[in-house]
Structures are given as C-alpha cells and as structure tokens.
Amino acid sequence: MYDTGKIITGLIIFLCLITFPLWYDAITGKAATKPELKIITKEKQCVEATPYMRDSHMKLLIQWRDQVVRENKQLYKGIDGKTYTMSLTNTCLNCHSNKEQFCDQCHNYVGVAPTCWNCHIIPEEKS
Amino acid sequence: MDNSKRTFLKVAGFSLLGIGSKPIQKALAGNEEPKILPSPEALTGKRWAMVIDMKKCKEDCRDCINACHQVHNVPDFGNPKDEVKWIWNEPYEKAFPGEENEYIEEYIDTTLKGTEFITLCNHCDNPPCVRVCPTKATWKREEDGIVMMDYHRCIGCRFCMAGCPYGSRSMNWRDPRPFIRETNKEFPTRTRGVVEKCNFCSERLAKGLIPACVEACKEKALVFGDLENPNSEVRELLRFHHTIRRKPQLGTRPQIYYIA
Image (cartoon, rainbow over all chains, first blue to last red; front, side, top):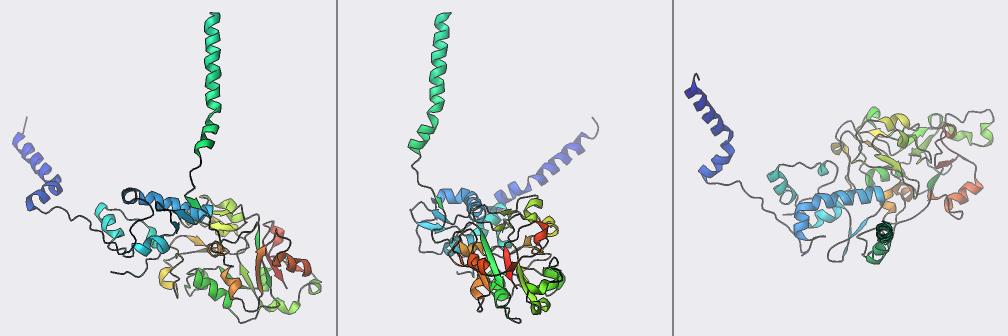
C-alpha cells in the first residue's frame, strides 16, 4: 500500500474535524445552555398535564386548529375540568405571555421554526 | 369427521357473536365526556345569507368596509392591483353585467345605476372556488352554507381567484402585516402567499355576534339572516321586495341579494 502514513493521518484529521462539536464541549467544559422557561401566570395548571404539554403541545395545537377552523368547535375541556376557548393568541398566550422566554427557548434549542407567528399575533410581551 | 365439523361450526358461531358484541361494548364503555365542544352561544342557521338594500346605502359612507377591515386585519397595500377585498365598492355595471334589458327601469331604480354597490363574497350555494381548490383549503360548510377558508392549507395557487366570477378573492403578494392600519389582536393576520376573502364573520357567529359590516351599518342597509327560516328578517325582505343577485346566470347560486 502506498502512502499509508498520509492516508491514516488524513483520516485522523478528518475524524477530529467531524467530531468537533462532540469534543469541543467536553474540552471547554461548557455544555450547551439548557433552555430555561419563564412562565408568568397565576394559573397552576395548563389545559393538559405538564409532561403531555411538554412533548405533545404541537399535536394538541394542530387538533385545536382543525377543530376550530374546519369543524366549527371552539371549546376544550381541560384536565382540571375547566372549559377553555381553543385559541393560540387568546388562550395559550394569555398565560405564556412571553413568547421569547417561553416558546423560543426550546424551539431555538432544538432548532425548529414553527410558522405559527407568521399569522397569529404575539401579544405585547410582559416580563 | 362429523364431530369436527360440529365443533368448527360452534367455534365459528361464537366468533361471529364476538364480532357482533363490539358495538354493544362500545356503547357500554362510551360514556366518556367529549373534550371538544361547540360554543353554546353561537348563532346557528341552516343557510346564512345577506340582503343589501342599496336604496338605504349612503353613497360616501364606508362604515361597513372600515368595520370589516378593522376586525379582520385586512391590509391596504395602497395599490388597486394588489387590493385585498373582503367587502368593497363595485360600480353597478361591473357588479351586474347580466342585468341588461330594455325595461330594466321597471324593476330597478335607474338612478342607482351610476352608483357604487357594496359587494362581498357571495357565499355561493354552488361555489366554483371550492371545486377548483386542490388542497380543500376552501370548502362550503355543510351546516350553514358559509364558504370557509383555511389559511393553514392554502398553497397560494390562485385557482380559486380564477374560479370566482365575482373577484371576491385576493392574493397576498407581500407580507400584509406592515400594511395593516390598526391590528385587531384577537384575529390573526394572513401571511405572504395565501389567498383571502370574506368569511361571513364565522368567528363572530361562533361568539353569538352578527357580522361586523351588518353591525356597523347605521342605515340598516345590510341585513343578515337564515334563509331557511321563513320568519327570518332576510326572508321577510325577500317576500316584499324585488331582489337581484350578481351574475345568477352562471349557476353559482349566490346568497347575497340586492334590493335596487
């Protein structure tokens, strides 16, 4: 085999470069900043249990959207037995009133860009 | 042999019974409360329609247009080519090109012929825009006849704009947000690349309110109601007045009636 040394060194450099994001954090000792949510509300309970909301809020929102727009149904009975109007701007953002510190925290962290806000209005942010 | 056939039939019979019991089980277990409910205060009708009395409509008044545009965040691009139309003025000749006969003055107040007519989506009974929509972003609501629009599904192909013979649909060529004079926080805006139109205030009907344009008209020239209810105000008006509709010859069965 010709140029074994060159090929192996090349491969090692290549591997080092491609795994850069993995070892960089380990060496510098700073892990990626975890999202920190800030909820400004007096309410104790969301429409569903927190773990469900955390991983399935997008499914719930899509269900709400389809029910309101296409089925003409407006009300949702929450886990606490209260009835809520199915509305992103008028219900969700009432409690989660700061999009930057609530929605964007995780969405930026996981790198998703939902298009909700192209049309739905973000109420004036309270801090 | 006989014995095994007998067992087979028994087993088959019981299995069939098992299949039949499923709906019974469902009925017994199905007392779970529904989580999603329609709004109790919603106005309900079987065939919403509007009667517009042009004899009452004041020429320079724009109350209905302003109210609608404010409630629905309708942008004003300041350019007639890009105009977004929910409710707008149309000269008589353009709105009613089919009404051309020699004796027209017998049933139309001919002084109205030079004036601007209030026009909006006709919420047709046979809507051509719905037929051409490839994504079902627009559809006719079965329960009350409103031609609805789902901006989430609209891909901006503009087939509906070609299909609509009334010019009731408008494309957002640009992001409409900077062109909205005063934003209503309770109603979403649209985004670039979707088609929009009048929704007969379906969001207000769900809250038990009549359409914004009807509410805003001080002259009571706009009347909204259920055509299938013989005692409704719209039926009353149709009973006692001669009315015309826009381009009925096209077979779209428009549901906006004009007293002229």
